[in-house]
Image (cartoon, rainbow, N blue to C red; front, side):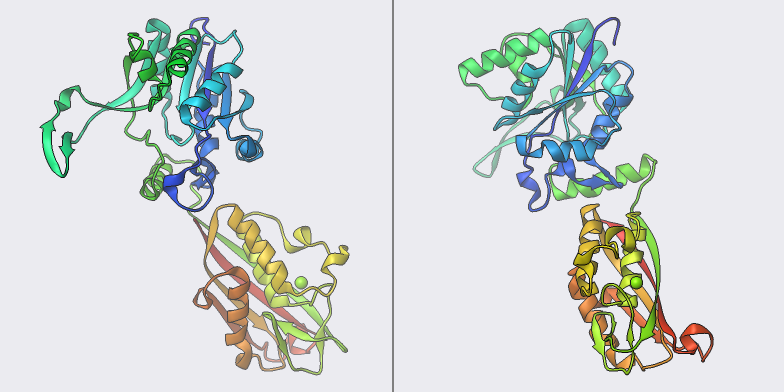
Length: 392
Ligand code: MG
């Protein structure tokens, strides 16, 4: 509430992000370990003046929105289906708001760094004046060019770069959208819909960090802002894994996805590839996704005798889906016999292929334990792995 006015944030997350190239729409990308949409919604969750949060998204992305937001947005009242354009999406969102809302703050989902003070300024001005929009003064000289020739230099002191939030009394914005729709007018923000009706929209000071994530360069800037603004910036994550399998007769010896000629094999539910298992556990550990037994229970018949390279591919896909890429992995296999050195190059290639990465990112060493311990007594094989992930 702001002075007895009910304030709703309408977060527009319906864009397909065509300027960003391949990959998920940028509102679902992770910045500093958290989805962009979650950061954006949290800014309004935190703001004492804001009562309700609504998200407008493509119908097919409603589940992605719920996954991105998790349970952390207690003010979330609804996820509404958007339209073909931003303006149509806002129109659809406005239709979903209850009449009890006095002030609506329209905000781009891809502006995750909006500050509390910026939201406060827009709410206050919208409550006092009916309509307000965040903006920053133009820093660069702005000219008009036609056919490659500058024809006009605009007065920079009168130029502003528009941001969101833009805040309005709900009936006013609804009327402006209805008029634009009736007349077939499409604007690039909401303020212009009021301006063309002769309504005044007041200028609220924006933030320089309140950038709109539009191009790949914006993502690099966003990572820098996330790192500087504190919190858990998960630029890098490290993980470790350890696995042991017992030697037995009548089974193959498979390590790093390579079938190694030997008189003994390893016992296990899958192919018992201890090296690949250690690597999987290191990957899962780095992303805090549990362990191999949790992801692939040995009570599940689907995994009986399965190639651990398939498990590796699946585990790595889970890590990738969290927004991480592999920097490097380093592993050591301890076995008294057989000699593993001749197979290491092939192991690196197979593990790399299973993860869709380059063998140069994967290091494997082999050692004996000088006859000591269970490895030395040739009772089994042990493997350790360490991985480093980076935010992608
Ligand atoms: Mg194992």
